[in-house]
Length: 214
Image (cartoon, rainbow, N blue to C red; front, side):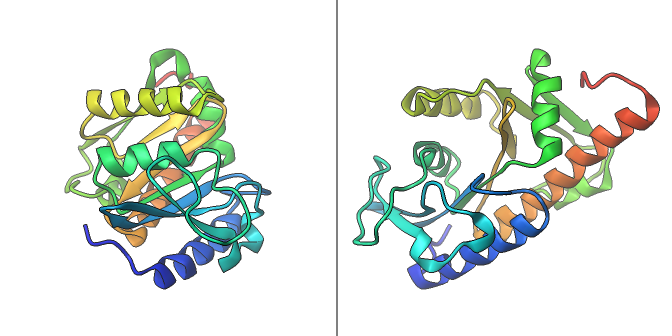
């Protein structure tokens, strides 16, 4: 994974915010996006807290250190979930982390929480995930309980990623999807694939009258 130049990362994060807002995946101030700028010392470009993603601008992208604290002169506070981005970037050696709040991700994260996650298999779209070469792949998306204690939730994220080393994403219950990639382009592709699959599962259950317990 090669870290992105700051200017490129900022511009791309803003573009992603506009695209995700347009698709209903990050309405209002929901969602947060990041890209690794440096590994040593660790530095992350991340969306500021409480910023509307449909109006995301370069001034809304901050730089933070490995504690989630801003290291730039730009006004604002890094996303409250910066520690989760840092935990994922380090545990998965990811170059980018994207978090969405879609309707289907939110609904399924609650409906399937009792089973601890959602299994998705048999869909051709799975081949859009890094390293997946067949529709017969079984993707397990863990569901974690939401928590406002970010250090504690970050530790839980690290544990979960350790328990499921092949997963490409996880859901926070009644909250949304987290996924990542080697680059922002990879992470954005994962969002597109996974949001499609979550919607497909939800709509299939509605049409077929079957349970949402995957």
